[in-house]
Length: 217
Image (cartoon, rainbow, N blue to C red; front, side, top):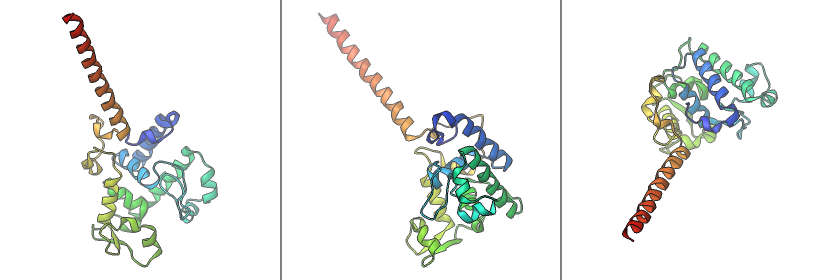
């Protein structure tokens, strides 16, 4: 099960996972969870628009949409499956621009999607500087408040978007299909599991006390 799959409508979850896995296979992205985390970071896995008019899971901008051969208005009319085909086309275009070098981590995938010019650049690479519209729109990523957003801070942002207890080393590793990562559970699943265990424990204690009283009588 992919991370954050629970954010997708239940009736679409199985098909959504199949589509994501196929896109990652076609784009040579070694871990489909990377794409899920990036989509969550960009849109909470919702087909929504942001303040500058970008739309969808990876927040395709109006100019980017035109480069893919579709208007942003037309893009908004598509089903989730239709949108994902344009997301795939965008990722493929960016990989092509990078001489065919596919991302080797979730961080690189985010660079590729979010700001391609920073792709595979050092952690110190400056994406945005104070005084620009781009900086104003991404000011929240300036964690040390020095007036610059650098690649290292983008990595911090991705780390912050992982599920609680998620093994962040997996942001750098291919998916291991032979292993199930409990860290992929979202908070809601953990809370439900813990609640069930607590209820069972309380129930057992009540049963023991009643049983003891009956024997004592």
